[in-house]
Image 1 (tube, rainbow over the protein chains, first blue to last red):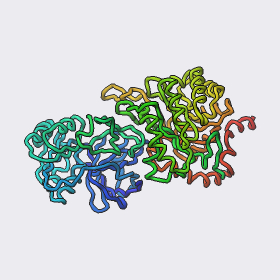
Image 2: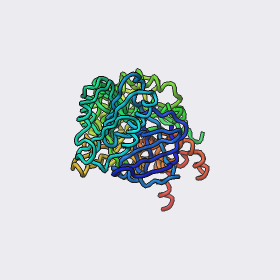
Image 3: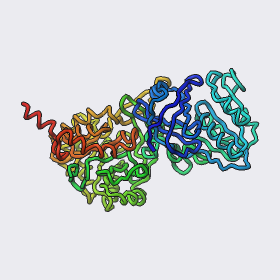
Image 4: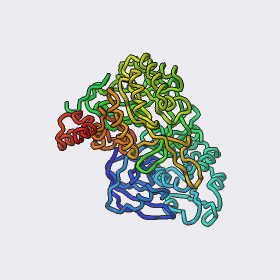
Length: 239
Length: 308
């Protein structure tokens, strides 16, 4: 489960947003799962899987603190200590259904790999990706190759002005897969789509379910984001 | 046998055990390695009833450390005995059950239930959790209250009782002497140091509980100093902890006077850390010319005397 991956590339693709590709040993990686990545800091950083091509995993991460800032300085050829894949991802067996993918900011990455896997099963998808501003937009072309893609920006500098909930209101789909900031997840969890799955983020300790740092309230108690999730049915958690 | 250690109630194949609260009830780590390699396991604290714990965020990183405010989340003593201990019974390792509560009555209830289980070899009396409103650390910062609770739990328990000391006191030796006099079979130390971090973008503490317990390498020098002082003040054994992440950290605690060592926060950084330390110990003892690991127990203060 713990391995030393080799970094193949690490580059900035949007404002404070990095794309890192690493070569990883044998692993079956489900979309929506994550790796717990060692940085110069004490605790690992959970990074969602943005893509998998053969033994190459892509991480897209935002530089927000000292750990991710240090990660951004790594170069091709460097080793990366990773633990994973961890957690439970999005359920792909949605044949015959239409899936809407709703991502916000750095919640967009896991939806790319998820969309590729859905496309491989012949499942029709539409994506709504929300960013704060034009400079923050990433992976638009990659998403467009896989189907209809709607971009929103809060300041209106690119795509539709406003939040993802605007376009979502006019979408006809059976299933919703979403990842992004909590206010957005709250909104999409309450949307008109029948079957709703959301991926939750929280500060983690161990990443494997032992420390109880990343719990989230649930109708019948609590769930651990790292090991019970990070993907949950909207009804399973109380945001 | 150079790593084997006998302590009250505990026959440890090596001095390494995960610290309470950093290893759950072992289930997650059992998927990574065989728990039978461990000297022991200090399981997550049990209270009388199930507790949800504190709001999130519950962790915040600091320089070489972390703050946590989990708040003793656990499923309650009955559920732990039924499900968790039954799982742990499969492994050849010594189980130390961490006992917590809000009132003396709750501590007594949990101690009685836990010590009655054949899987549990000793209790760790938690009078040092900084993250709960009632009980916890308030019992661990007043020597009279600590002694009284130790007496009550000793009377309720059929197994040896180790008292986990809080470092958030003026005199750690006074606390240690008080619990020794009250009948403690051993001491585990140290629990976390109370701390806080503030998010300067909001101006508010990062932790939802506002304060939390500092652990990790940052606290190791404090722990070493306290073990060093307590080892000279009492005649009961000490299980040392606080910032252990390497085999040399383990030896530092033994030199300071500990008889065994618990590994806490390092399990989050590297879930295989206990296994790696256990594997590295014999080679390191060879390099240092040490036969049995406890040959150097307390040498830090003994050598001060011989140098004089």
